[in-house]
Image (cartoon, rainbow, N blue to C red):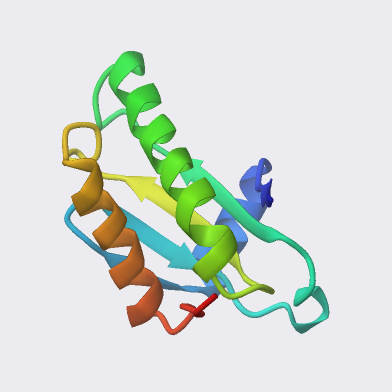
Length: 116
């Protein structure tokens, strides 16, 4: 199970102290390590700005990213970090398999990938 970042302050902290990887389908930001939280669930946040499109398009992008998080992150994302997924213009219409690969690549490139 994963916990959700909800407050703006949490999103800003990840952006300020973290690393990011820009892929075609999404942007992944990883906050600084929280060593005391290595046994807690993965914490994540989703965002889609108005640049993506109207509310219907933004909601579709968030739903697709949420599905990715629930599928990939509990098994493969390192614990003790906060993650923020940011939708890009291509997120709502990109093939789901390509979005999966984008997230996997981002986790590996940022050094937070873990095998089961």
